[in-house]
Amino acid sequence: MSSKVVVIGGGVGALSGAIRLAKMGFEVELFEKNSELGGKMNEYEDLGYRFDTGPSLLTMTHVIDELFEFVGANRSDSLEFLSLDPICRYFFADGTTLDTSNDQEKMVNAIDNLAPGQGTAYKNFLNYAQRIYQLTADIFLFTPIHELPKLMKRNYLPTLLQLNQIDPIRTVHQSVKSFFSDHRLIQLFDRYATYNGSNPFKAPATLNIIPYVEFGLGGFYIQGGMYRLVEVLESIALKEGVQIHTNTPAEKILHDQTQIHGVSVNRTVIPTNYVLCGVDITVAYNQLIDGKTKRKQYLNQLEPSLSGMVFMWGIRKKSTKLSHHNIVFSPNYQLEFDQIFKDQVAPKDPTIYIAITSKTDPDHAPSQGENWFTMLNMPYLNNQQDWNAETSRMRSTILAKLQTLGLDITDDYIEVEKVHTPEDYDNIYGSHRGSIYGISSNSRSTAFRRPANRSRNLKGLYFAGGSSHPGGGIPLVMLSGKMAAELIAEKEKII
Image (cartoon, rainbow, N blue to C red; front, side, top):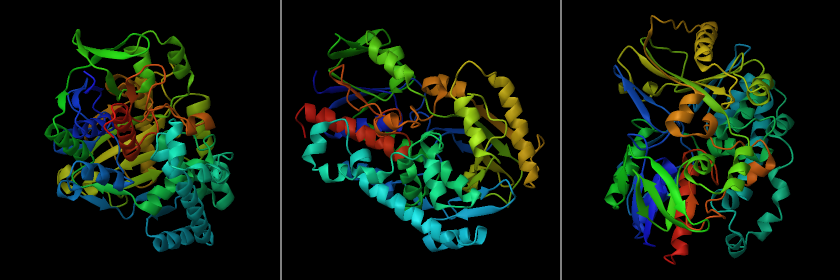
Protein backbone atom coordinates (compact mmCIF):
# COMPACT_ATOMS: atom_id res chain seq x y z
CA MET A 1 0.00 0.00 0.00
CA SER A 2 2.94 2.34 0.60
CA SER A 3 3.61 2.63 -3.14
CA LYS A 4 0.13 4.01 -3.85
CA VAL A 5 -0.65 7.74 -3.86
CA VAL A 6 -4.14 9.19 -4.05
CA VAL A 7 -4.22 12.66 -5.64
CA ILE A 8 -7.18 14.88 -4.79
CA GLY A 9 -7.93 17.55 -7.38
CA GLY A 10 -6.97 17.92 -11.01
CA GLY A 11 -5.48 21.39 -10.99
CA VAL A 12 -2.14 21.99 -12.67
CA GLY A 13 -0.19 21.61 -9.41
CA ALA A 14 -1.71 18.27 -8.44
CA LEU A 15 -1.60 17.02 -12.03
CA SER A 16 2.09 17.81 -12.40
CA GLY A 17 2.77 16.08 -9.08
CA ALA A 18 0.80 13.03 -10.20
CA ILE A 19 2.87 12.79 -13.40
CA ARG A 20 6.14 12.83 -11.47
CA LEU A 21 4.96 10.26 -8.97
CA ALA A 22 3.81 7.90 -11.72
CA LYS A 23 7.10 8.33 -13.55
CA MET A 24 8.95 7.43 -10.33
CA GLY A 25 7.02 4.18 -10.10
CA PHE A 26 4.13 4.96 -7.77
CA GLU A 27 0.61 3.73 -8.40
CA VAL A 28 -1.30 7.01 -8.75
CA GLU A 29 -5.04 7.50 -8.68
CA LEU A 30 -6.44 11.02 -9.17
CA PHE A 31 -9.94 12.25 -8.27
CA GLU A 32 -11.38 15.51 -9.64
CA LYS A 33 -14.82 16.75 -8.64
CA ASN A 34 -15.48 18.61 -11.89
CA SER A 35 -16.02 17.14 -15.33
CA GLU A 36 -12.62 18.30 -16.61
CA LEU A 37 -9.13 18.70 -15.23
CA GLY A 38 -7.38 22.03 -14.81
CA GLY A 39 -9.16 23.69 -11.90
CA LYS A 40 -9.37 27.44 -12.52
CA MET A 41 -7.26 26.90 -15.65
CA ASN A 42 -10.07 25.82 -17.92
CA GLU A 43 -11.91 26.92 -21.06
CA TYR A 44 -15.39 27.91 -22.22
CA GLU A 45 -16.84 27.92 -25.73
CA ASP A 46 -20.11 29.22 -27.16
CA LEU A 47 -21.25 30.30 -30.64
CA GLY A 48 -17.72 30.15 -32.05
CA TYR A 49 -16.16 32.17 -29.21
CA ARG A 50 -13.51 30.43 -27.10
CA PHE A 51 -12.19 31.64 -23.73
CA ASP A 52 -9.53 30.64 -21.24
CA THR A 53 -11.23 30.91 -17.85
CA GLY A 54 -8.11 31.31 -15.73
CA PRO A 55 -4.43 32.21 -16.22
CA SER A 56 -3.78 34.14 -19.40
CA LEU A 57 -0.03 34.80 -19.23
CA LEU A 58 2.79 32.30 -18.86
CA THR A 59 6.18 33.02 -17.26
CA MET A 60 9.14 30.87 -16.19
CA THR A 61 8.63 28.51 -19.11
CA HIS A 62 11.68 26.48 -18.05
CA VAL A 63 9.56 24.98 -15.25
CA ILE A 64 7.27 23.36 -17.82
CA ASP A 65 10.20 22.33 -20.01
CA GLU A 66 11.82 20.58 -17.03
CA LEU A 67 8.70 18.50 -16.40
CA PHE A 68 8.67 17.37 -20.03
CA GLU A 69 12.36 16.48 -19.79
CA PHE A 70 11.63 14.50 -16.61
CA VAL A 71 9.23 12.24 -18.50
CA GLY A 72 11.50 12.04 -21.55
CA ALA A 73 9.42 14.29 -23.80
CA ASN A 74 10.09 17.45 -25.79
CA ARG A 75 7.71 20.25 -24.91
CA SER A 76 7.99 21.94 -28.30
CA ASP A 77 6.53 18.82 -29.94
CA SER A 78 3.16 19.51 -28.33
CA LEU A 79 3.12 23.09 -27.05
CA GLU A 80 4.26 26.31 -28.69
CA PHE A 81 5.05 29.28 -26.46
CA LEU A 82 4.61 32.65 -28.15
CA SER A 83 6.43 35.72 -26.88
CA LEU A 84 3.95 38.59 -26.94
CA ASP A 85 4.95 42.11 -27.93
CA PRO A 86 3.47 44.17 -26.50
CA ILE A 87 3.11 42.04 -23.40
CA CYS A 88 0.35 44.37 -22.26
CA ARG A 89 -1.22 47.69 -23.28
CA TYR A 90 -1.91 50.05 -20.38
CA PHE A 91 -4.56 52.76 -20.40
CA PHE A 92 -4.14 55.39 -17.69
CA ALA A 93 -6.82 57.60 -16.21
CA ASP A 94 -5.36 60.73 -17.87
CA GLY A 95 -5.88 59.25 -21.35
CA THR A 96 -2.27 58.22 -21.99
CA THR A 97 -1.21 54.69 -22.94
CA LEU A 98 1.89 52.53 -22.68
CA ASP A 99 2.84 49.28 -24.43
CA THR A 100 5.17 47.12 -22.34
CA SER A 101 7.84 44.81 -23.73
CA ASN A 102 10.52 42.43 -22.47
CA ASP A 103 12.84 44.10 -25.00
CA GLN A 104 14.64 46.41 -22.57
CA GLU A 105 15.63 49.05 -25.11
CA LYS A 106 12.09 49.17 -26.47
CA MET A 107 10.67 49.39 -22.96
CA VAL A 108 13.06 52.18 -21.93
CA ASN A 109 12.11 54.20 -25.02
CA ALA A 110 8.40 53.69 -24.41
CA ILE A 111 8.74 54.81 -20.79
CA ASP A 112 10.80 57.85 -21.75
CA ASN A 113 8.16 58.81 -24.30
CA LEU A 114 5.51 58.58 -21.61
CA ALA A 115 7.53 60.15 -18.80
CA PRO A 116 10.79 61.76 -19.94
CA GLY A 117 13.77 60.67 -17.87
CA GLN A 118 12.07 57.68 -16.28
CA GLY A 119 13.67 55.13 -18.61
CA THR A 120 16.78 55.14 -16.43
CA ALA A 121 14.60 54.61 -13.38
CA TYR A 122 13.14 51.54 -15.09
CA LYS A 123 16.59 50.07 -15.73
CA ASN A 124 17.53 50.65 -12.10
CA PHE A 125 14.28 49.10 -10.91
CA LEU A 126 14.73 46.02 -13.10
CA ASN A 127 18.29 45.55 -11.81
CA TYR A 128 16.97 45.80 -8.26
CA ALA A 129 14.18 43.27 -9.01
CA GLN A 130 16.67 40.93 -10.69
CA ARG A 131 18.85 41.02 -7.57
CA ILE A 132 15.88 39.97 -5.42
CA TYR A 133 15.13 37.14 -7.86
CA GLN A 134 18.72 35.93 -7.74
CA LEU A 135 18.70 35.90 -3.94
CA THR A 136 15.27 34.36 -3.46
CA ALA A 137 14.55 32.02 -6.38
CA ASP A 138 16.56 28.98 -5.27
CA ILE A 139 15.36 29.19 -1.67
CA PHE A 140 11.82 30.51 -1.90
CA LEU A 141 10.70 29.16 -5.30
CA PHE A 142 12.64 25.98 -6.04
CA THR A 143 13.10 24.51 -2.55
CA PRO A 144 10.51 23.29 -0.01
CA ILE A 145 11.59 25.98 2.44
CA HIS A 146 9.93 24.36 5.43
CA GLU A 147 12.35 21.41 5.16
CA LEU A 148 15.30 22.68 7.21
CA PRO A 149 17.68 19.85 6.24
CA LYS A 150 17.31 20.85 2.58
CA LEU A 151 18.28 24.42 3.35
CA MET A 152 21.36 23.25 5.24
CA LYS A 153 22.29 20.50 2.78
CA ARG A 154 22.25 22.85 -0.18
CA ASN A 155 24.47 25.36 1.60
CA TYR A 156 22.05 28.24 1.45
CA LEU A 157 23.51 29.86 4.58
CA PRO A 158 25.50 32.54 2.67
CA THR A 159 22.33 33.51 0.82
CA LEU A 160 20.24 33.47 3.98
CA LEU A 161 22.69 35.94 5.54
CA GLN A 162 21.96 38.35 2.68
CA LEU A 163 18.19 38.29 3.04
CA ASN A 164 18.16 41.90 4.18
CA GLN A 165 18.82 42.66 0.51
CA ILE A 166 15.47 41.19 -0.61
CA ASP A 167 13.69 44.29 0.71
CA PRO A 168 11.33 42.54 3.16
CA ILE A 169 10.50 45.60 5.30
CA ARG A 170 9.14 48.09 2.77
CA THR A 171 5.90 47.51 0.92
CA VAL A 172 5.73 46.99 -2.84
CA HIS A 173 4.35 50.53 -3.21
CA GLN A 174 7.04 52.12 -1.03
CA SER A 175 9.76 50.42 -3.03
CA VAL A 176 8.28 51.25 -6.45
CA LYS A 177 7.78 54.86 -5.39
CA SER A 178 11.47 55.11 -4.47
CA PHE A 179 12.41 54.39 -8.10
CA PHE A 180 9.71 56.22 -10.08
CA SER A 181 8.38 59.74 -9.73
CA ASP A 182 5.65 59.42 -12.37
CA HIS A 183 2.37 58.31 -10.76
CA ARG A 184 1.39 56.26 -13.83
CA LEU A 185 4.54 54.14 -13.66
CA ILE A 186 4.12 53.71 -9.91
CA GLN A 187 0.62 52.38 -10.53
CA LEU A 188 1.85 50.08 -13.30
CA PHE A 189 4.54 48.42 -11.16
CA ASP A 190 2.33 48.36 -8.07
CA ARG A 191 -0.01 46.15 -10.10
CA TYR A 192 2.32 43.16 -9.96
CA ALA A 193 1.36 42.45 -6.35
CA THR A 194 -2.02 41.36 -7.72
CA TYR A 195 -0.30 38.52 -9.60
CA ASN A 196 -0.47 36.58 -6.33
CA GLY A 197 -3.66 38.23 -5.12
CA SER A 198 -2.13 40.79 -2.78
CA ASN A 199 -2.34 44.48 -1.93
CA PRO A 200 0.68 46.51 -3.13
CA PHE A 201 0.19 48.90 -0.22
CA LYS A 202 0.58 46.05 2.29
CA ALA A 203 2.61 43.27 0.64
CA PRO A 204 6.41 43.22 1.17
CA ALA A 205 8.60 44.67 -1.56
CA THR A 206 10.18 41.24 -2.07
CA LEU A 207 7.27 40.61 -4.45
CA ASN A 208 9.03 42.95 -6.87
CA ILE A 209 10.59 39.77 -8.23
CA ILE A 210 7.35 39.40 -10.20
CA PRO A 211 7.97 42.22 -12.70
CA TYR A 212 11.47 40.88 -13.21
CA VAL A 213 10.07 37.44 -14.03
CA GLU A 214 7.81 39.03 -16.66
CA PHE A 215 10.18 41.60 -18.15
CA GLY A 216 13.50 39.87 -17.51
CA LEU A 217 12.52 36.28 -18.30
CA GLY A 218 9.60 37.00 -20.65
CA GLY A 219 5.82 36.81 -20.84
CA PHE A 220 4.30 34.15 -23.11
CA TYR A 221 1.04 32.81 -24.47
CA ILE A 222 0.39 29.18 -25.39
CA GLN A 223 -0.63 28.83 -29.04
CA GLY A 224 -4.21 27.60 -29.20
CA GLY A 225 -5.04 28.81 -25.69
CA MET A 226 -3.66 28.34 -22.21
CA TYR A 227 -5.85 25.28 -21.64
CA ARG A 228 -3.71 23.38 -24.14
CA LEU A 229 -1.25 22.93 -21.25
CA VAL A 230 -3.85 21.04 -19.21
CA GLU A 231 -4.77 18.85 -22.15
CA VAL A 232 -1.14 17.91 -22.79
CA LEU A 233 -0.46 17.25 -19.09
CA GLU A 234 -3.53 15.01 -18.93
CA SER A 235 -2.26 13.08 -21.95
CA ILE A 236 1.16 12.63 -20.31
CA ALA A 237 -0.45 11.55 -17.03
CA LEU A 238 -2.51 8.88 -18.77
CA LYS A 239 0.53 7.69 -20.69
CA GLU A 240 2.47 7.36 -17.43
CA GLY A 241 -0.34 5.27 -15.94
CA VAL A 242 -2.18 7.76 -13.73
CA GLN A 243 -5.76 6.60 -13.17
CA ILE A 244 -7.92 9.71 -13.60
CA HIS A 245 -11.50 9.98 -12.32
CA THR A 246 -13.50 13.12 -13.14
CA ASN A 247 -16.91 14.01 -11.69
CA THR A 248 -15.68 12.17 -8.60
CA PRO A 249 -15.16 14.32 -5.49
CA ALA A 250 -13.18 13.00 -2.56
CA GLU A 251 -15.33 12.94 0.58
CA LYS A 252 -12.80 12.60 3.40
CA ILE A 253 -9.09 12.12 3.99
CA LEU A 254 -8.98 9.30 6.53
CA HIS A 255 -6.43 9.13 9.34
CA ASP A 256 -5.82 7.92 12.90
CA GLN A 257 -4.81 11.41 14.16
CA THR A 258 -1.18 10.86 13.20
CA GLN A 259 -1.05 8.86 9.92
CA ILE A 260 -3.04 8.92 6.68
CA HIS A 261 -4.60 5.55 5.88
CA GLY A 262 -7.10 6.22 3.12
CA VAL A 263 -9.48 8.43 1.19
CA SER A 264 -13.24 8.08 1.08
CA VAL A 265 -14.71 8.34 -2.43
CA ASN A 266 -18.30 7.44 -3.30
CA ARG A 267 -18.62 6.04 0.23
CA THR A 268 -15.83 3.62 -0.52
CA VAL A 269 -12.48 3.64 1.27
CA ILE A 270 -9.41 3.67 -0.96
CA PRO A 271 -6.47 2.55 1.20
CA THR A 272 -3.29 4.61 0.91
CA ASN A 273 -0.51 5.90 3.11
CA TYR A 274 0.03 8.95 0.89
CA VAL A 275 -2.31 11.70 -0.23
CA LEU A 276 -1.27 14.54 -2.51
CA CYS A 277 -3.98 17.13 -1.96
CA GLY A 278 -4.45 19.77 -4.65
CA VAL A 279 -7.48 21.25 -2.91
CA ASP A 280 -7.14 24.70 -1.32
CA ILE A 281 -5.45 23.89 1.99
CA THR A 282 -8.00 25.77 4.13
CA VAL A 283 -10.88 24.08 2.32
CA ALA A 284 -9.16 20.72 2.84
CA TYR A 285 -9.08 21.21 6.61
CA ASN A 286 -12.61 22.61 6.64
CA GLN A 287 -14.22 19.88 4.57
CA LEU A 288 -11.97 16.84 4.08
CA ILE A 289 -9.95 16.45 7.28
CA ASP A 290 -11.71 15.82 10.58
CA GLY A 291 -10.21 16.12 14.03
CA LYS A 292 -7.56 18.77 13.40
CA THR A 293 -9.36 21.72 14.98
CA LYS A 294 -6.28 23.73 15.93
CA ARG A 295 -4.82 23.64 12.41
CA LYS A 296 -8.24 24.40 10.94
CA GLN A 297 -8.66 27.45 13.17
CA TYR A 298 -5.20 28.74 12.30
CA LEU A 299 -5.78 28.50 8.55
CA ASN A 300 -9.17 30.18 8.77
CA GLN A 301 -7.59 33.15 10.51
CA LEU A 302 -5.25 33.84 7.58
CA GLU A 303 -6.33 36.55 5.15
CA PRO A 304 -7.48 35.16 1.79
CA SER A 305 -6.21 36.65 -1.44
CA LEU A 306 -8.09 38.75 -3.93
CA SER A 307 -11.07 37.28 -5.66
CA GLY A 308 -12.36 38.41 -9.03
CA MET A 309 -15.31 39.02 -11.28
CA VAL A 310 -15.04 37.88 -14.88
CA PHE A 311 -17.20 38.70 -17.89
CA MET A 312 -16.47 36.45 -20.87
CA TRP A 313 -17.95 38.40 -23.76
CA GLY A 314 -18.25 37.30 -27.35
CA ILE A 315 -18.13 40.70 -29.07
CA ARG A 316 -19.45 41.03 -32.63
CA LYS A 317 -17.01 43.82 -33.33
CA LYS A 318 -13.27 44.33 -33.78
CA SER A 319 -11.17 46.78 -31.81
CA THR A 320 -7.97 48.30 -33.15
CA LYS A 321 -7.29 50.07 -29.84
CA LEU A 322 -6.89 46.91 -27.79
CA SER A 323 -4.04 44.39 -27.79
CA HIS A 324 -3.88 40.77 -26.62
CA HIS A 325 -3.54 41.91 -22.97
CA ASN A 326 -4.92 45.24 -21.77
CA ILE A 327 -5.26 47.11 -18.49
CA VAL A 328 -7.57 50.08 -17.99
CA PHE A 329 -6.47 51.60 -14.68
CA SER A 330 -8.68 53.16 -12.05
CA PRO A 331 -7.82 56.78 -11.18
CA ASN A 332 -7.10 56.01 -7.51
CA TYR A 333 -5.32 52.70 -6.95
CA GLN A 334 -4.99 53.02 -3.18
CA LEU A 335 -8.71 53.69 -2.81
CA GLU A 336 -9.44 50.63 -4.96
CA PHE A 337 -7.37 48.38 -2.69
CA ASP A 338 -8.71 49.99 0.48
CA GLN A 339 -12.22 49.16 -0.69
CA ILE A 340 -11.27 45.58 -1.59
CA PHE A 341 -9.20 44.62 1.47
CA LYS A 342 -10.11 47.13 4.20
CA ASP A 343 -13.78 47.81 3.51
CA GLN A 344 -14.20 44.39 1.84
CA VAL A 345 -16.58 45.71 -0.78
CA ALA A 346 -16.52 45.74 -4.57
CA PRO A 347 -14.58 48.82 -5.73
CA LYS A 348 -16.54 51.78 -6.99
CA ASP A 349 -14.20 52.37 -9.93
CA PRO A 350 -12.26 49.17 -10.62
CA THR A 351 -9.21 48.56 -12.76
CA ILE A 352 -10.24 46.49 -15.79
CA TYR A 353 -8.19 43.70 -17.33
CA ILE A 354 -9.11 42.53 -20.85
CA ALA A 355 -7.47 39.54 -22.56
CA ILE A 356 -8.37 38.92 -26.21
CA THR A 357 -6.75 35.70 -27.39
CA SER A 358 -8.38 36.05 -30.82
CA LYS A 359 -5.82 38.81 -31.46
CA THR A 360 -3.25 35.99 -31.57
CA ASP A 361 -5.47 32.99 -32.36
CA PRO A 362 -8.06 34.30 -34.85
CA ASP A 363 -10.09 31.08 -34.71
CA HIS A 364 -11.05 31.88 -31.09
CA ALA A 365 -13.81 34.13 -32.42
CA PRO A 366 -15.92 34.49 -35.57
CA SER A 367 -14.28 36.48 -38.36
CA GLN A 368 -15.97 39.76 -37.38
CA GLY A 369 -15.75 39.25 -33.65
CA GLU A 370 -13.43 39.07 -30.63
CA ASN A 371 -13.39 37.06 -27.39
CA TRP A 372 -13.03 39.40 -24.42
CA PHE A 373 -12.01 37.92 -21.07
CA THR A 374 -12.76 40.91 -18.86
CA MET A 375 -11.70 40.70 -15.21
CA LEU A 376 -11.94 42.94 -12.15
CA ASN A 377 -10.28 42.56 -8.74
CA MET A 378 -12.85 41.79 -6.04
CA PRO A 379 -12.89 41.10 -2.29
CA TYR A 380 -13.08 37.56 -1.01
CA LEU A 381 -16.51 36.41 0.22
CA ASN A 382 -17.57 38.11 3.45
CA ASN A 383 -21.40 38.05 3.43
CA GLN A 384 -21.50 41.79 2.67
CA GLN A 385 -22.16 41.65 -1.05
CA ASP A 386 -25.22 40.99 -3.18
CA TRP A 387 -23.30 39.52 -6.11
CA ASN A 388 -26.23 39.66 -8.49
CA ALA A 389 -26.52 43.39 -7.87
CA GLU A 390 -22.74 43.85 -8.08
CA THR A 391 -22.60 41.95 -11.36
CA SER A 392 -25.15 44.31 -12.86
CA ARG A 393 -23.35 47.38 -11.48
CA MET A 394 -19.94 46.22 -12.65
CA ARG A 395 -21.23 45.40 -16.09
CA SER A 396 -22.54 48.95 -16.49
CA THR A 397 -19.35 50.39 -15.00
CA ILE A 398 -17.13 48.52 -17.47
CA LEU A 399 -19.17 49.48 -20.52
CA ALA A 400 -19.31 53.14 -19.46
CA LYS A 401 -15.56 53.21 -18.80
CA LEU A 402 -14.80 51.63 -22.16
CA GLN A 403 -16.86 54.31 -23.88
CA THR A 404 -14.45 56.93 -22.52
CA LEU A 405 -11.73 55.11 -24.50
CA GLY A 406 -13.81 55.25 -27.64
CA LEU A 407 -14.84 51.61 -27.31
CA ASP A 408 -18.57 51.68 -27.84
CA ILE A 409 -19.57 48.19 -26.73
CA THR A 410 -23.31 47.85 -26.13
CA ASP A 411 -25.67 44.91 -25.63
CA ASP A 412 -26.21 44.87 -29.39
CA TYR A 413 -22.60 43.74 -29.86
CA ILE A 414 -22.44 41.19 -27.02
CA GLU A 415 -23.40 37.82 -28.53
CA VAL A 416 -22.07 35.63 -25.71
CA GLU A 417 -21.84 36.37 -22.01
CA LYS A 418 -20.56 34.12 -19.23
CA VAL A 419 -19.96 35.56 -15.76
CA HIS A 420 -17.88 34.31 -12.84
CA THR A 421 -18.22 35.99 -9.43
CA PRO A 422 -16.38 35.24 -6.16
CA GLU A 423 -19.24 32.86 -5.34
CA ASP A 424 -18.42 30.89 -8.48
CA TYR A 425 -14.74 30.61 -7.57
CA ASP A 426 -15.89 29.19 -4.25
CA ASN A 427 -18.56 26.85 -5.62
CA ILE A 428 -16.96 25.64 -8.86
CA TYR A 429 -13.28 25.53 -7.97
CA GLY A 430 -13.37 25.12 -4.19
CA SER A 431 -11.37 28.30 -3.60
CA HIS A 432 -11.56 29.34 0.05
CA ARG A 433 -14.04 32.24 0.30
CA GLY A 434 -13.70 32.76 -3.44
CA SER A 435 -10.01 33.67 -3.24
CA ILE A 436 -8.19 33.08 -6.51
CA TYR A 437 -4.64 32.79 -5.15
CA GLY A 438 -5.15 31.06 -1.80
CA ILE A 439 -3.67 33.11 1.03
CA SER A 440 -2.70 36.76 0.48
CA SER A 441 0.87 37.98 0.92
CA ASN A 442 -0.23 41.12 2.73
CA SER A 443 1.98 40.30 5.71
CA ARG A 444 5.57 39.10 5.91
CA SER A 445 4.61 35.89 7.65
CA THR A 446 2.26 34.80 4.88
CA ALA A 447 4.49 36.14 2.10
CA PHE A 448 7.51 34.09 3.19
CA ARG A 449 5.91 31.16 4.97
CA ARG A 450 3.01 29.86 2.94
CA PRO A 451 1.64 26.51 4.16
CA ALA A 452 4.13 23.70 3.68
CA ASN A 453 4.00 21.01 1.01
CA ARG A 454 4.30 18.36 3.74
CA SER A 455 1.82 18.29 6.60
CA ARG A 456 3.32 18.53 10.07
CA ASN A 457 0.33 17.00 11.86
CA LEU A 458 -0.56 14.11 9.56
CA LYS A 459 2.08 11.76 8.21
CA GLY A 460 1.54 10.97 4.55
CA LEU A 461 -0.36 14.18 3.72
CA TYR A 462 1.16 16.50 1.13
CA PHE A 463 -0.11 19.65 -0.59
CA ALA A 464 0.25 21.18 -4.05
CA GLY A 465 -1.44 24.21 -5.57
CA GLY A 466 -1.65 27.95 -5.20
CA SER A 467 -2.57 27.90 -1.51
CA SER A 468 0.65 26.08 -0.52
CA HIS A 469 4.34 26.82 -0.98
CA PRO A 470 5.61 28.47 -3.17
CA GLY A 471 2.34 30.18 -4.27
CA GLY A 472 -0.01 30.88 -7.15
CA GLY A 473 0.54 31.11 -10.89
CA ILE A 474 1.26 28.38 -13.43
CA PRO A 475 4.99 27.85 -12.79
CA LEU A 476 4.72 28.07 -9.00
CA VAL A 477 1.87 25.59 -8.68
CA MET A 478 3.79 23.21 -10.94
CA LEU A 479 6.79 23.62 -8.65
CA SER A 480 4.58 22.83 -5.65
CA GLY A 481 3.59 19.59 -7.36
CA LYS A 482 7.24 18.80 -7.97
CA MET A 483 8.21 19.46 -4.35
CA ALA A 484 5.37 17.39 -2.95
CA ALA A 485 6.14 14.48 -5.29
CA GLU A 486 9.84 14.55 -4.43
CA LEU A 487 9.11 14.64 -0.69
CA ILE A 488 6.93 11.56 -1.06
CA ALA A 489 9.62 9.81 -3.11
CA GLU A 490 12.24 10.68 -0.50
CA LYS A 491 10.04 9.24 2.22
CA GLU A 492 9.87 6.00 0.24
CA LYS A 493 13.63 6.24 -0.40
CA ILE A 494 13.09 6.26 -4.17
CA ILE A 495 15.25 9.36 -4.62
